[in-house]
Image (cartoon, rainbow, N blue to C red):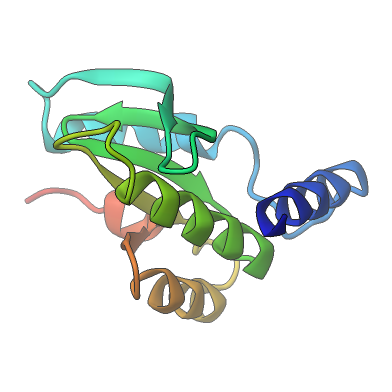
Length: 136
């Protein structure tokens, strides 16, 4: 029930042009940085997995053992990411894989770090700026 409400809220925000949303191409923008960190790892886009509730979730990409989603620094996105992570991590369908949420911190770093600390209670989350830093 809660996940359904979160999906409706997310859809409504998209329809209203909520300016809190990250541009749809942020995942594509981050993709080369993600690949560069582990060039030999398996990489796939738009990966679907089942959670413990048999709900199907889509992640922006899988890179190595990470199921990656890029999300805006917004409470609705964080709430849905927590639900998604909890369901997927407790399901028997993704042995060896783990969710990783990359939070867009380009507009409001303080808000992004707050959302990351909330997500960090149950799953891995990092700011987008960390992914975009040079490796050396």
